[in-house]
Length: 163
Image 1 (cartoon, helix red, strand yellow):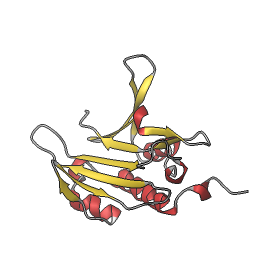
Image 2: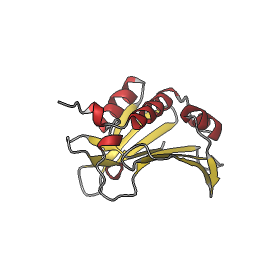
Image 3: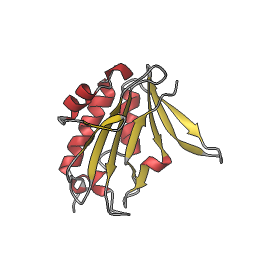
Image 4: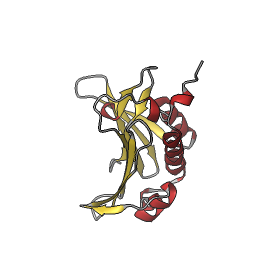
């Protein structure tokens, strides 16, 4: 029998580990710089409109990832965004599901983040914020996709300027 873990793309597993290392060690929004993010992921971010972005090549099964850094200004903190994407609508997320919501929650809380559930306007919840110092990481329902095994796979997370 093949284990679930073996169906994850090794490249996606590596990127998910880099992301978690970054998120659990970044001290504040001031450290969300092009140089720091580029060094953590071993990539070069390029200017793209109002932010700097890196988009990977294929991680397996058509999946890619991107990272972006938005510079701060007088009214907004620096920002960070990470996402997995596949140009094929409805693509099986199993290859990139090395980072599911439960694993993200467990790792962040173990490293001092506090989870705050965000209430939906229609009742229920619309996602979670994870807070530590001045960092606010946000995952919404739109940032998750269900894998065939039932895991809620992270396809995107970002910092928000929430307080």
